[in-house]
Length: 409
Image (cartoon, rainbow, N blue to C red):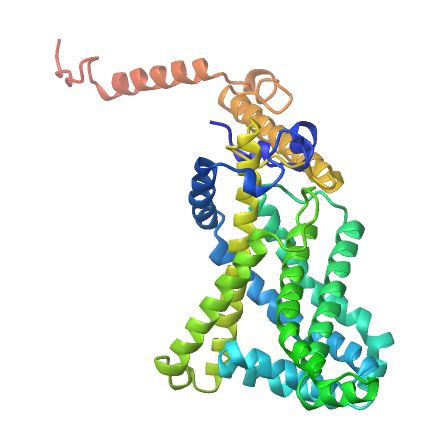
């Protein structure tokens, strides 16, 4: 059976993978038949385990912690330009408090309040936004590496292209979150005040307060869809703002998060066990659940694509057949691997040859060891040992069979 070591390189897929929107594939997931859906469901669970997604989620949690406060700094900088960052972030934290454990919100609320209350926070955009986005993009880059494993391909994009993509995705995510925060603020007394200024009546505001929630959910799904589409090194079918995987990821996360919050509030004793670190542990577990949900949704989308390819007769049972976005980095790494293999082979053959020459009594130049009469071959060494042994027996008065001779004839 073929191994993934060769079939999962971007250079290999560049030459054999069909176009993302190949006409043979079903145009929509609705066109997949029942056996394909059974295969997709089973394969999603197995690939989630095979790709070690819990471990990948733990790595993403680490990068999320490193990127959290730079992302908050960028968010506060944007909010400071267009509104009151203190009110906006407070409203955002209240929404998060509705489904996240209270300890998680308490852990991040202090640093967020310090950022929003810093003097001239809005003017940090020009100076600090680029730096904050660069730091926050570390999570997006790690997510891209995880997505490459999900789609069974290596990274082929050069550093500049890859980093530019990750920065763009990070900026888009921060802007969408800023929009979400602004929508949260436009509710209750604030929406009534704004409506009075622009002449909107009460019924319109009531409709807004109801309609904003589906819009906010759609924006959250859009962030997930952008992560799924832009971060892996594969050319996917046309972009969809709402993929099935992103919807599943959101539902799984909400259910798991509510369940985890219920457990922490009623049965967990993290504060007793970990003391002051209890809130931090809870926040890390919550982020881990979030990343597990995102990876599960990504696995589902990937297996839907595999199901489309299989139903179209494309050989995708071993690896998903999507062309890579780029192969430059992959080609460079492949050359380095080939150079290392060649160097290692040369070393092995050199030392093997030297070992063979030592066993045959030759020096490194292939000449007999020593000069002239000092050159002794293995056969000559054996004859010398036999001659010495016979001479020793003769001198000690022993016969060839080892019996000592008598004193007289």
